[in-house]
Length: 327
Image (cartoon, rainbow, N blue to C red; front, side, top):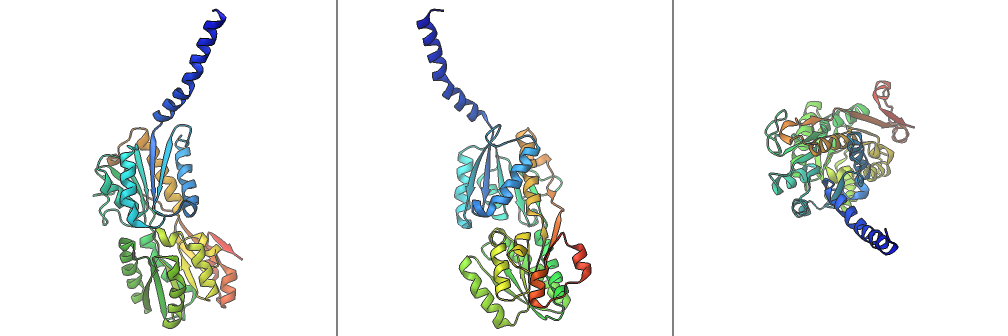
């Protein structure tokens, strides 16, 4: 080959490299990740989602692309964000929270949707059956709605002389708020406790909530679930400590912030399972053939330092049951 021909050949090959690279990227399957919390608040759960994908053979940037959409705690943005993912023609949508799942389902009846929720997916209309979901939707539940009354029982065990308790819920997430209020209300009645349901939709509400607890003479607080409150666990734990309120939250972050205890299904485990299901869909399985999974891992954390500050003696039986005791 003459030198001029060789240069033309090499030059032509180099010119095609970017196009080949873009074509390869375009051929990658695309996951649409629809969340309600900020990326910072969601970071540990996104990591768990990646773990699930990796365990099933998918790595972002290597053989799959992920389009992230976050409502930044403004649930009203979710329909538009879901519509963006549908317009993007993603291969599958991971809808991480009850509001995100409902928005995704309303946006498409054809693109597979894998949800994560603490609610009963049948009661909220996501699926018609747990074993045979039907349609384009299936996913993972993590039990936190049904577990919330257990938080009140745990709080009663820690402060058995308290007769007035409070429950904090997010009314912007009405499905979960109503289920938690009903379940915890029934548990309070069974324990002979007076229960007040308080609401918060923004960070600005928290100081007023703790002032209200003092007015009500409530000697304990149960923090409900949902995306907004889940993303504020550490902040709420710190506020409970500062205001000397024995409180039980949903996750380890609540106890790390200074909260007395936390009890809930493992959110990270649920996200990891969502990653597994997304991978199975990318490999060709249909959502209607994938039964709704239940993340069965439940975690109990206790902060003995906070208990000591409040003059609370934590029973040895409770310490023995804890996944972690912070001293």
